[in-house]
Image (cartoon, rainbow, N blue to C red; front, side, top):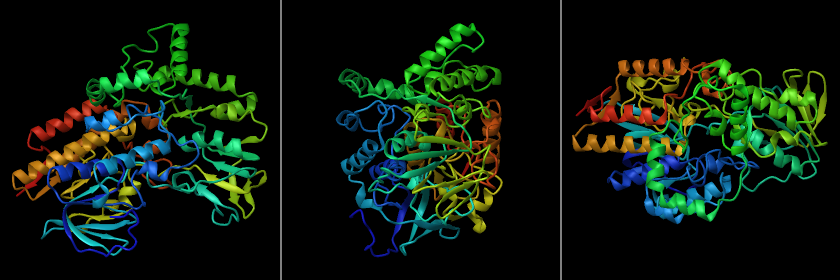
Length: 542
């Protein structure tokens, strides 16, 4: 089937499984389902595969997990035939990899592109899901899986006049595929999260004038990106089974040893030397993993936070600008920290200006630019680097209805509730991949995706072999899991920050810590135990 499906005839077919999303999760799920003999259909809004890496084409888009680790592990031949070029792969390279995976396993024929799923309702009598799309498709499936990604529902800022600007506006999460030429233009960037921090240095290379509007300063660490050496590529390929096994049972799904010392078990000079080593290493783990209490003890975290603030003050020449760039309202790591290339140094450039929105908030966007409470700015283009409705947005954007017509959006009105981040009570035969209540965004997503896909497909195979028609999370199991996720989260500093981990970037969204912080290896063990016990916490009906 061609990538552009606008001419496709709406179908009334039934499938064993319908999947939403053709990123790495949807593709691997399709591959596993086909190997097991299940009929499956994947619906994808975009015109191609890749998910996050299909949509996020903004300047400087790059993964913050090292490329050798951020790759599929399910096929040894795939591991050997693909060679990454850089330590941290760029968006174009990752998208090429996604297309290679789709082509190598012949996945496109079961993916319907340019199609958005509008609704999915569970028919209690037929014990099947009824799915409708914006293309007129009405299909049924025994199982329905949301593989729609954790960071795929972008959001614009809540600013008056946002639709009045006469020039072009761009969101980093929906960057034009043909690219954007900002050469010689007066450009505004609103937002200093990951996409802002990655794109600002590159936009500064093009723009005649760049003004960055920052509400909350973020911690960022230099990536020290570089080409991969042939010897290290060969070593990884020779040791992939060993490396993959370590990652699957690690805390974050990466090749990182867990520290065994507190930040206060060493003297300050030794501690700062360790932080300097982490700063120079060019990865987030070098600092986040320096000591074992940085994410649980505020005083310990203060030592690494102040180290990074000291680095910002060293890099940025203007003391006032440096201070505005120093995060002081959240501990390091409790908001998604970033990896960058020359981000802080960009503010030393004469044509780059920082506007601190905590001192002078934006009052309105105008046809010619942006008005703050103290000044009017004229721009030729505005870039919104304002992030996503993380982890739940893409799921509840589909009208999903379970038993007695209960809407998932209504069920989650006071916070997302799942069992293991995989199932939801009241929604039989429904699964989420890397959903709320799983390690997901606190881990190497490739490792978590593969673990979820393998658990779900093993489950479906078990149900078929035992003639089980439905599987549904039990309410008490869901309650216990939500309580556990919250208790473990409360042992850390994460809930102290107004982060997208907490849903704090979306007005009106409940403040609930969404991911599971217990670790990839621990979580895998819990899921394996549930399966081995005959799917404890689920009701299976024949």
